[in-house]
Image 1 (cartoon, rainbow, N blue to C red):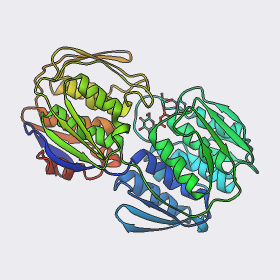
Image 2: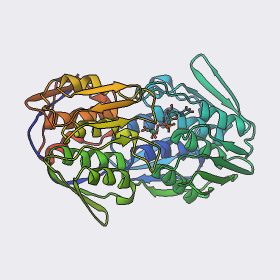
Image 3: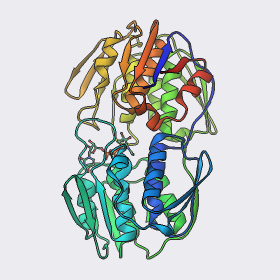
Image 4: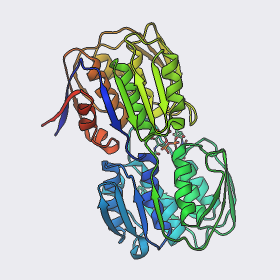
Length: 417
Ligand code: UD1
């Protein structure tokens, strides 16, 4: 199995181009099934999750052609199955979007309970509640979520928790339901807005995406679409934090600075310089960043996906910091690995206390999930000596060419067997 070998000590400098947003793209590929007309998606990130979803489309009978490494043409007219296979579905969380998309188009879906990163319990009760409220019969048996509906009917759905996945899944199904659906307490992430724009460009009638009330008027048919995925704010945040942690000077190209506000604000609070200009952001590291407390929340709060990465940065801050993880119950699995590198972190429930100005030393570590893997890369960059990261498949699920991009910024990083 390949591993990543990092020699610490280099400050990152230069320019990095940010890829398309994973969490928008992984919803659009299943969402393409809602139409029978041609779909083209540009600016797709070249990552494993996308390749798995494309394999699922092929299995379902859909024709797909890669027009470039980031542009996919999908012909959903030949869809002839509604049961994505377990071996592919278990590889990523976002396969739950086949529920909303297939039941919207086909009236039925049988999707194995999805896999993805282990962040503690990740129920999908809100997805099920939403689909059932739209009139579908939903049963979970033998590891399969079976959804069936002769005709979906629009209704009011109030989400008990703010969920990105449930908001998008209900939006997909409601697009082809009869009448009006209102999703209240909806998630507001930019990826949700991008998926709504994608569907509206096909002829869907979705209003309010990006606020906590989304109104959808169902339509009988959807047409063709060509859509460009928004930039990945989590990938961007990763390079911002890496630049800050290494005391570097990095320009990120092709970003939407507004989407990065929660990260920019926190870095500035840590006395790290962040400059915005058009679709670029420049981060200038500070050898002794100020300590800061971070609380993760749904957008526009600080993203949980950057929690482990910012923890690495805080090990270098002047003083102690506190991170509170409010989105996932058990997202501190990276802490034990960081401690093996010398970090001094105490976890109590959903709170972690991080001691600043800690000397990190290279060590073998295991990427326990996608974002933790990226956190270990940053830890390796600032640690003394060599770090070897195993289980890097998790990292490749969500980061396009991370080794090449980091190396181009001066990181001493390479893949080894
Ligand atoms: C998405 C993102 C993931 C990010 C997360 C939170 C994708 C593919 N993944 O994951 O990168 O970390 O949002 O920003 O977009 N919950 C329930 N019941 C449900 C659904 C969720 O209780 O039916 C809970 C979850 O356990 C969690 C919280 O709601 O505590 C938020 O989860 P959610 O927003 O649904 O995360 P995902 O969509 O899985």
